[in-house]
Structures are given as C-alpha cells and as structure tokens.
Length: 333
Image (tube, rainbow, N blue to C red; front, side, top):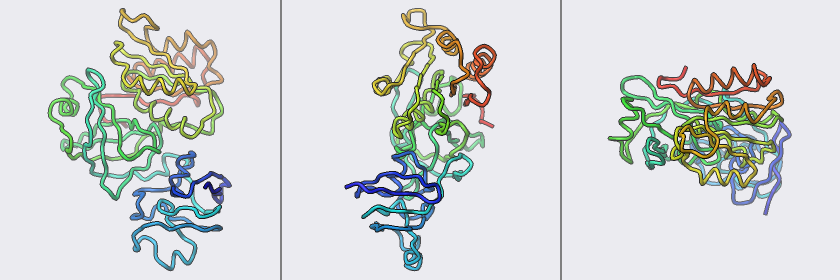
C-alpha cells in the first residue's frame, strides 16, 4: 500500500509505502530532509506530524519524549506512514545546510578495479550516518595533520557504506599506504561532507559531465542520484583516461546508457580505436554551442581549467553554468 506525504511549508509531495520510513521515502524521491544517524538516536530528523497516522517505530526514548509525541513530533528516520500524511520539516537544498562531522570509520572492503585504482568501502559506527549531496567529498585525517581529500562515489540514497576511488600516486604517503599496507578492518578518521560540487536539480538545461581518471567517482555519485530521482534532463558523459583498462566499472556505465545517458570514452593510448586526445577537446568537437548547457567537470586541474576556459570562450558556456572539482595532490581549499 502506498501513501501520499506532503511537506510543509514547501508543498512538496512524495509517495511512501507502508514498510519504509518517511525519511527513506523522501530521499528516494530526491527530497532531502535533515538526518544523521538514521536509527532514532540523534534527533536531527525530528519534525512535526500535522495530519495523519504513523507507526513511530523503534527509537531511543531520550531522543523523543512522550511530551514531544503529544505535541505532534516524530522522528522521520523511524516513523512509517499508516495513512496519507502532512508533515512539517525543513528541507536541505544547499551544501551549507549540512553539518560537517569528524567521525571514525572502518575499512569494510578493498577492491582493486584498475592497475592503479582501489575502491575503498568505509563503514561508519552503528549509530552514525553521513548526510551529503551527491558529488561532495570527505577528508581522510592523518597523523601528520595533512588531510587527504577524496570524492564520495556513492549516491546519498545508498549510504550504508561510503565509497572512495583512490588512485595510486607513486611516492604519495597515503596512497602508498592504501596499496601496500592498508587492510580491511583498519580504522580511519574522516571529516565531511565538504565541497560544492553537486547536481543543481533546479536547472532545466541539458547536462554534460566531463571527467578525467578518478574524476569518475563524483560523477558516478551524481549520475546515480539523478537516475534515482528521475532527473528529466538530457545527459552526456565524457570520460578521459590514459589507456582502455583505466575505464573501470563499465558495467555500471552500461546500465546508465540503457537509461538514456550518452557515454563517450576518450583514451589517450594510440592502440585505442575510439575517440582519443584531450577529453574536453572531444566535447568541443561534438558541440558547436554550449550556451544552453550545464557542465560538471571533475579531475586533473589542467583538464578542468582548460574545459572552463575553452567552453566559455569558444562555445559560449556561461560562467554560472560550469561546476567543477579539481583533483590535486594537496588538501583542497
């Protein structure tokens, strides 16, 4: 059975089935309500039930008192609908509205997906979840006080584990550790979410994603989020790498293509039979006018800077339609 939930004061509506929480249903349909732990312990998701009936679910009594329940309050990460509902809750629409946390996490899985790319899956403590927007990044905090920044490769609706794509940089202290000494169940400290690289859902222009190397990671998160919420825009994805084997996770890309996303791999290796050269120049070859597009570029600074310059000067892309995240080997500012 499905119920309709309306949010005040925004007026947004979304459906929810009886066995999913109000928060889960909202996130599934692209509406981000405040949350943190997602298990009734922190109280961040607390909001008001204006109309309708709910199952309050299991939660810690110290987080929601009987007096608060009598006043109509509920924990939306636990509460499940028993009828159509009207709720009162703030909606998160900007990165600045999400609290930045410092948390411990455990290395749950390690998977090498290319010669020099390791996928780390990090698990937070049982009473914690990290709220973030697709495309944001976290810092790994090290004893030398120099944080290492990595984009989150998973979308917010799939936040049971945090996914990072780590490229091996010869001589890089942290990446050498990842590829030679790190093991599953190791403990790390993280800070996040950080950054302003995320999908602007209110823009109605077609979208071009441009990534180099592991710039694939935040683009993956954004695309999976866009498909999850039914983002109705034309989407193109250009991915530049050095050799064909650097195109990892192509099984996921094929699923995106089946959903209508147009994928163009760009490989520098001369043995490659497809598109080659600089990835942003391939975009220039394919589009004579970018004035009506929104571009998200992520990867090496030289690619991002060249794309910004050339898309603007040669193809008329407005400055406010270019969003980027540069991957450097120093902490992000």
